[in-house]
Each structure stands twice: as structure tokens, then as C-alpha cells.
Image (cartoon, rainbow, N blue to C red; front, side, top):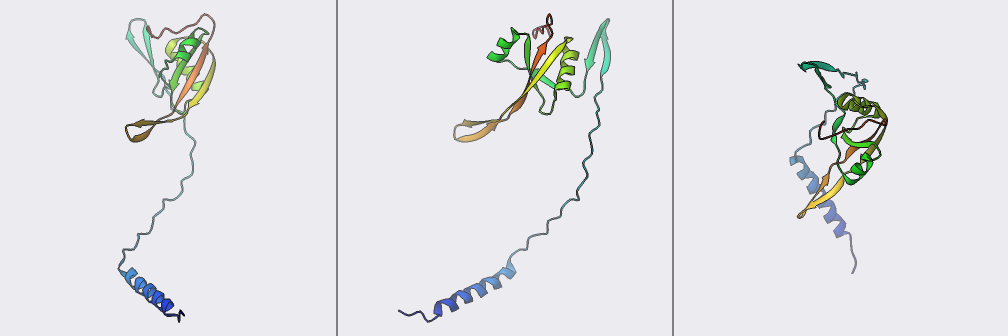
Length: 153
């Protein structure tokens, strides 16, 4: 069987008809882009406020505290025997901030701070798959003779 070009004419006719129908399609709005803003270095706004709550007791409040709460696990309880304590801290906390916060809150001397970024994990509940968000831990080593009693603190 010979093809005498009838197929080509049909394709071009369909193509022309489709371009005619494109006139009725909604046009996409132009995307307006925001102008670039130069990055500005953050200004430290940490202020310590001391208030007298009762006679002889001072309460130190830091608006931006690096410590969220003590982290309790088998490893954390094992580290307490070596005078090291584990805390869950904010995502962007650094070692000097954590050291200062621990010394202010618990009135102890911090020798070293080690930071760990815990990755996020996948969790399934039924047929739904989600993620458990990651977090940041700090292992704080205290000076000899110092200790933290979480039940009292």
C-alpha cells in the first residue's frame, strides 16, 4: 500500500484546528517577583531581667532561651554517672548560648558542650506516611563537684 501523503495533510489540519482552539484558553497571569533584599546581620537582643519574687530569691528570665528541656533516654541516664547531662535545644542554638543558659538556669559551671543534630524519621500510622521532625541535642559536661537535680530544678 502506498501512502500518498494524505496522512500528513490530516495531521496539519488537526494541528491548525488545535491552534485555533488555543484562542479560547485562559492565559496565565504574569508572575510578579519581589525585588531582592540585601541580607542584614541580626542584632543580638538577648536581655536578662532580674526580678525579686520573694525576699532573697532572684528569678532570671531570658527572652530567647536556648534550652527547651532535659532529654531523657537510656544513654542520657548513663551519661549522668560521668557528670554529663543531655538537653533538647532549639534548632539554631550554638555552644556558647547553651553554656550560658545552663549556667544561668542551674547555677553550675559548664566545662564543655557537644551538639548533635538528630535527623527526621519516617513514621507510618495506618496507611498514612509522615515524618517525625528532627531536633538538636546538647551534651553538657559539668565541672567536678557540680550536679543537676532535675526533680528539684
